[in-house]
Length: 88
Ligand SMILES: [Mg+2]
Image (cartoon, rainbow, N blue to C red; front, side, top):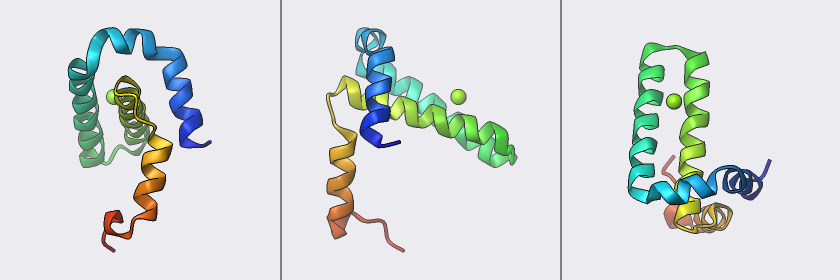
């Protein structure tokens, strides 16, 4: 699945409620999910970590939707700019 397709699914399913909640409170939810992912990783619970990876990605796309940011475009730009690539 492409990022744009996933972002559209998130937008179609959740945007109405997400936009009412707003970016600030959505960011709080996102941070909570990052914490849950960190805890799952630390505990070594792989099944729980899988769920939390999904939660984090979905909330990230939710924030992008609220801010009208096209993640497919952003990631393509990121990958095509060597200065933005993570160090190996
Ligand atoms: Mg979670």
